[in-house]
Length: 281
View 1 (cartoon, rainbow, N blue to C red):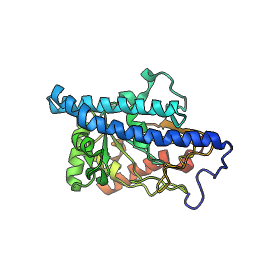
View 2: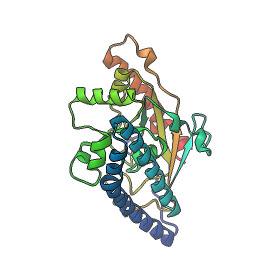
View 3: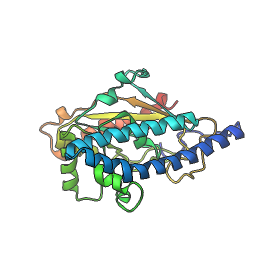
């Protein structure tokens, strides 16, 4: 779908409303930064003192971050910046959190398309035991470095070590979040899907749960967009469509390259923009 905009450009119909939402967006990012600092210098060190066992600390800290991300989304909703909805595999909206299938996932991989900067925040907010493969630049000095070092896997380690750490995390009951594109999508379409998620699923012998992130245009949160851009006429709508699990059972006996290609083709079919036109609401 490269070459034409996934979401056609819209004119701003109400400039005052647009300015309010843009201001709310800037405030939200400042709020997120302050929260990240408090988390890294106060809350997580306090959790380490309370939960001395490494696995217990990890489990409780992940729940804390999921809760804080839900609170952050609530703030953005109040400011008319963003809101989130979750839909089950039949396309029905889930209004009762007790029925949210993402909250009960364990020992699996979640894969998703990557249209915006906030995708990982939206998904972790729904999954209390989420783990991620963090981008290598987060391993450098910034406000998220300490959090990443304490809880998550960074991509700048040797491949064999990366796979082993992923397998250990999945075996511990965590849900590993991977964006197969490897980077945010372009406004004109998705990037080529990489096979990393399929290879890890094969190594860990676990299921893959695809989530298509739909909703409206994420202009201002896309790759290379200015922070001050905003969706012209609405808050950001994050509609998470939970698809059927993909299990690697039918790949038993196949060579790793062939099995990985088969799995990633199923992931592509579940997450491709052209297969989810009705979900881009």
